[in-house]
Amino acid sequence: MVDQDGSEISIRRQCKLLNVHRSNTYREVTERVETAENIEIMHHIDQIYTDHPYYGYRRMTKALEEFGIHANRKRIRRLMRVMNLYPVYPGPNLSKLYHAKYIKPYLLRNLAITRPNQVWGVDITYLRMHKGFMYLFVVIDWYSRKIVDWELSGSLEKGFVLTCLNRALEKQKPEIINSDQGSHFTNADYIKLMESNHVKISMDGKGRATDNARTERFFRSLKQECIYLPLCQSSCRALI
Image (cartoon, rainbow, N blue to C red; front, side, top):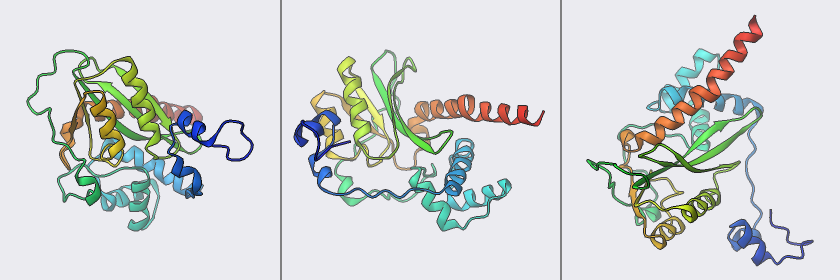
């Protein structure tokens, strides 16, 4: 965190070390803190979404009733947005107009992936924690299925994505990097980083669930095997 008063290091230097833009130090960032009840609902939303990524907020609201959770649709829609969860079905292009110029075509259709570092996939997912939640960003080599690098963050500020990518690109570079059309990837900083490293940029088609299948499959396996299965086993032991 940038110390504006007591540090002997200049604000410029602190921002460079933390990979934070200087303009962010001149305004107070107010972030809504979710209640314990909302966090519990978000955990259930994530568990349902892992099995049914095509659920929108209406079907999610209905599915939550099976857990005894009765909340209105507007609340569920807001929480899904906080979690960066969107149903994966074809729909209208909801990207902001000022992001449109950064959207790139999908380059992987019918491409044979035959070697390491040919294609990297990147994405962000909501991650349930014992108390609260975090966001996990991963870089995956699509040939070897190896996790090239990863980073955790308590918020969706884009800085943690760029920090991880800078670190990964220092070790090795892909020919193509594929992402969705989220704001973390449709911005000048991301585009500039890839172009400066001579990496071709590919982005999923809007609403195309299969375009980023390898990365989505990893997230699903991670949650089912390392989060929800242990939670289920723990609950079963508690009942014995």
